Image 1 (cartoon, rainbow, N blue to C red):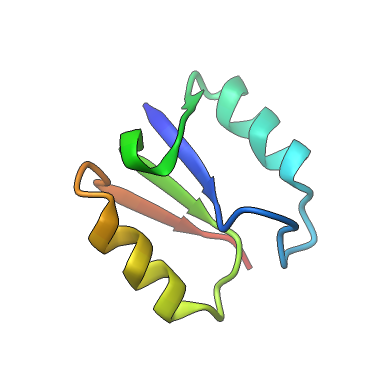
Image 2: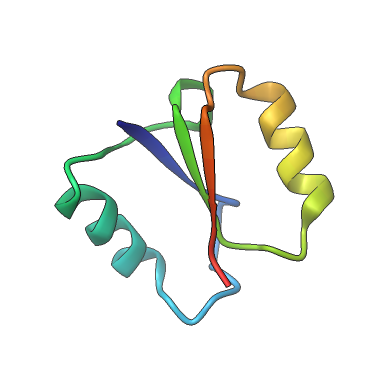
Length: 68
């Protein structure tokens, strides 16, 4: 599964971007740019507008994991 961790920058969750990246890789995923992603780990659960824009621009995305 090709996965993007978004939004770019510092996550607004207790998990660090490095921990999230490690989890994706340990599960057999590949980290990719949003345009190539089939899945998104969204770290800013309160930014629903940003998530909507991301999904509109990323037609290959089939699932989203919200991190709280």
